[in-house]
Image (cartoon, rainbow, N blue to C red):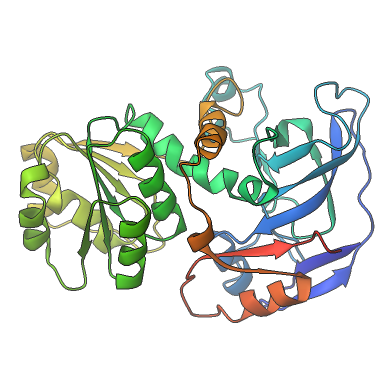
Length: 349
């Protein structure tokens, strides 16, 4: 079968790999339709950040069931499915308390084992979410990143009636903006340094936008003055500057949810740290996208938003291409920020 393989040093190539086979009684063979590039894949490709090489990445994929193990009785051949990439042990204390993302004995599709940038993949039944008939396979490939944002909203107790501020309008941020607008937020403000991203956010769900390359924290606070209470600030960019900004612009009693992953040391000055105390802020960390019953209500909520036509994915897609085109598009990213979701299209294989 064709597989997009990342070799040590960041070299990517389309290679012929052996067809995967069912090994465990709960295994499922899936023919891939679409598989997305995640921002977390960038260091795995360009910064030697993978657990092993060569590796086939891909944890945001959709496809159809080809065959099932003998213990699988709730999906069947031909069903459309999406990837649920985490596989916790379900046995440790953290799993028993339904804190699945805290499991230390986990596997992860497309990271700790080969993933969906290929024609076929074998995964555990627990790694698949059956798509309703109303969902498309493109939507299925976006299901995992959507649930990342929905998990953050869930941890904050929802967003209904709140003044939501999203710092970082990349793909995850854009999806949170749309989800918050569709889920009863009183207002949604997008903050980014890229004006094109802000313009897109205003077209797809944001009611306000601030360019933090042109406005300092005080100016952003003044811009949000009428919306300073009942704030839910979600930080998705994962930089020291945006974490500090989230605290600097927060209104009294605001909730601040940290979603972005830091890759540099974070140092807060005295004034920024004092905001946490003086404003009595609530800080929440959000890690992955799982709750109980497995894989969580976030996944059902995402498909419901699709069914209600509340999410617009088209402007978030940078490219959709066959394996060779996908490799070219990803390779061109070296040292450059992602401008949208890059999707591998295996439907023509």
